Each structure stands twice: as C-alpha cells, then as structure tokens.
Image 1: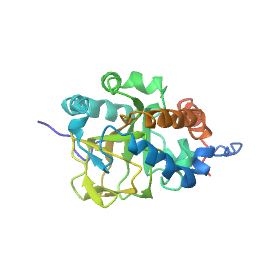
Image 2: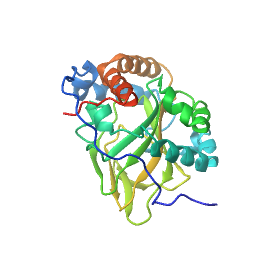
Image 3: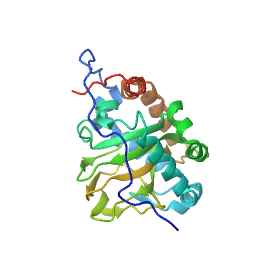
Image 4: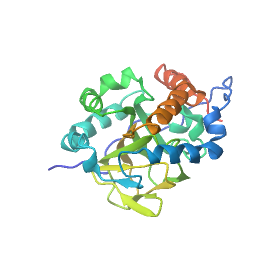
Length: 265
C-alpha cells in the first residue's frame, strides 16, 4: 500500500492580517467558571458512560472507525487538495480566540468541515468522499483537518467536556523526527492510515519534533451515555453551541472564506 510522504504540500502558510475593529466577546459562563464546574460535570458524565473513561480508548469499541482506515488515502488526497488551494486552512488561533494561549499563529492550522453541528459547506463540497464518511459517525459534533507545522509544541491543555470523545486519523505523519502526543501519563504516536481514539479531558500536549508537517483528520463525537449523564452532556453542548466560544469562531471562519482579514490579538 502506498503511503503519503512527509514532504506533501500543505498550502498557504502565511500569517493573516488583523481586523482592528474586532473586539473579543465575553467568554461563556461554562468556560469562565469551568475550573469550578467542569470537574463536577465530568464526574457525573463519567458515571453514566457506556464506554471506559480511560485516556486512550479501544478503537474496536467504535466500529465506524474502520471505514476511515479503509479509505484513508482518499481522505488524505482530498485534504491535501483542499489545503493546497485557496483559501487554504487558517490558523486556529485566528478562528478561535479561546485557543490563542496554546495555538501559536501559523503553527496550528485547521480546515473545518463542521463544528458543534454547524456545517462548513464550502469545505464539505471540496471533500465529498470525506464528507460522506463523517456523516456516518454516530453523534458527530465536529470534524476538521488539523495541520501542525514543523517544530511546533502545543502545551498541556484539556478539552471542554467529557461528553465528547476525539478520534484522530493519521494522514501525513513525518518520519524524520518524533511526532507524538502525551495524554495523561501515556505517550502515543500517530501512524498514517490508523485511528487513535482518546478522551481529551485528560491533560494532554502535542509535539511535532520534525522538519515536516503533520496532518490528521480530527473528529469529535458524543460519548455514548445513559441518563443522567446524557442529559447533562446534551445541556452543556447546547450551551456551547450557542455561546461566543462557537459563534465567534463561526463569524471568523465566514470572514476567512470571504477573503477578509481576521482579528488576532
């Protein structure tokens, strides 16, 4: 089986200009007070989980991941084509202001397909095969191509809610260095064509200690739950979907696709 090389093209990588009139909106209550509330919510959700609460989960518990592995080369080809043509993939720090502390401008880029239930039709149309596959993911919340520049370190951070689980499909993984992620006390590495399923509420950080770019398909989906955890998770995700955390990112993404400058403070 042929595999992608780590020298694959990655499209536009220049930094984006600022939008002076843009002002940061207040962060949602869930995020501003998350350090006080998140632990309680996560414990209640974990107690209702129908899958283990371990940092890394067995991909066999999620049979739909097999379709991603089977068609990973087609997904990779669509990703490279979409990233390599205008408007390309913007810096996550510019699209989502809440990521600025961990996502250096120009170092971590994301080509969004959908986020918190909102479709990005321009990108879905450019990736029809990938779009059909992600539509089959039960409880799909978000999907994007995550692009990490050479020499990038994403510092330790945690996801917003245990109500979501993350899946990575390796598309372009450099072989000239150490490209890895620490999740809790465990260190994992990507492989092209393989899936990694994990709980991002565990403290985790990422390194691309290589001279080339790493690209994965990142999918977030709802954790299988019984009540009351399902009700709690659904309520939290509903709050997040309507919050400035998501709505500001949507507005910035629309500006990007219109060719406008995006704010970066």
